[in-house]
Structures are given as C-alpha cells and as structure tokens.
Length: 168
Image 1 (spheres, rainbow, N blue to C red):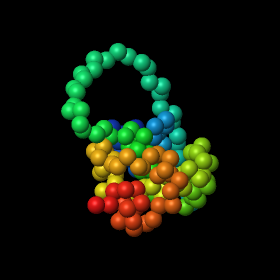
Image 2: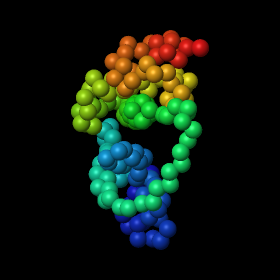
Image 3: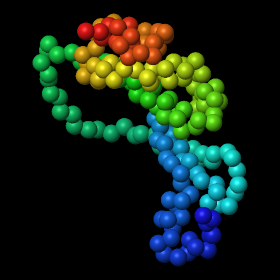
C-alpha cells in the first residue's frame, strides 16, 4: 500500500494513514522509539526507520503517601533484583525487535556496554520460579545483582535454581 498525501485531506483517513506508517512503538526509561514503515511512503529500503524521542523530564510534585506496615516476619522484595530482571527483559525485547542488528551494534546504538548487555540478555532466560521468588521477595539471601550478572548461568532451569539456591 502506497500512501498519497492528498488522501490525508479526507476526513477519517488520517488515522488509517498513521496506523500504516507506524510499525511499532517501544517506550524505554528515557526515550520512546517509533518504528516507521518506509514502504508506505513509497521508499524502498532494507533498513528499518526508527524515530527516537526523548521522554520529558519529570517534575517533582507533592503527593500523599499511604503507609501500610506489613508483618515484620515477612521478607521484602529486593528492588535491585527486580530492577535487574526488568533490565534483562528490556534487553531481550531490544534484541528480538532488531534481529538483523548485532548485539555490539545494539549496545552502541543504545549507549550501553556490550558485555553488560550480553549478561542481561543471558539473564532474560532466567527460570520463571526464580523470577517469581524475586518478585515475591522469597528468594534466598545468596543471590545479589552482582552475583547474578557475573555468574556463568546454565541454560537448564533446574541447574539455575540449584546455582542460585532456589532448589528444593
């Protein structure tokens, strides 16, 4: 389908035109990336068009906070480990949405360290049981952000659980 700019003047065709131009939208922590479909504009190219928009800075504001004290014997979820799992999922999404781009190129484009990205990608294959325990805060005391990043993590989930102390 090729888009003719004269069609945009007709009421109701703007939304359809935008939907055909925009192939996808990814929202990151500091920017939003819009994947554009160049074929709709009549441009033949093998490269993907990505339009990157920085997210606006957040302004501080006052908010009311409701504090609910939990029982003291409950464990709390580790924000470091939750953040680590979230970062791993972001890297996995980056890799899956750009299969034609190498990890080194992705790291350079994203302003990240290639080694760190590779470690995060490896962590994206973490056992669901481990991820669930981290989210609930019931993980053993052993795993830390650093230990999980530098470990030679096996592919087999049961081996991962044993390595990080989750084995029953």
